[in-house]
Length: 87
View (cartoon, rainbow, N blue to C red):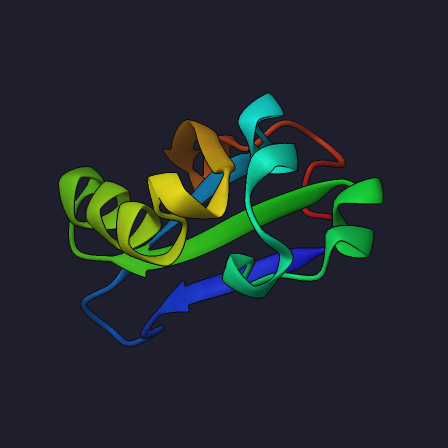
């Protein structure tokens, strides 16, 4: 699944990040989980549209907070994403 973050406009650059569920998410109460657990049975990535890598990382931290148990990794420019890694 591809999770889109940010606004895709003329000033934005695309960034790719692999998303994974951390082991501690099993202890998070179900009502506190903002995402369905079933989607994490599949590969999840984020496409983040931002003006810089720091801005993209900030958007990822906001969308996937510590409390969610989701861990973004390998922030790369979208053009450098591993082949076949779009979804």
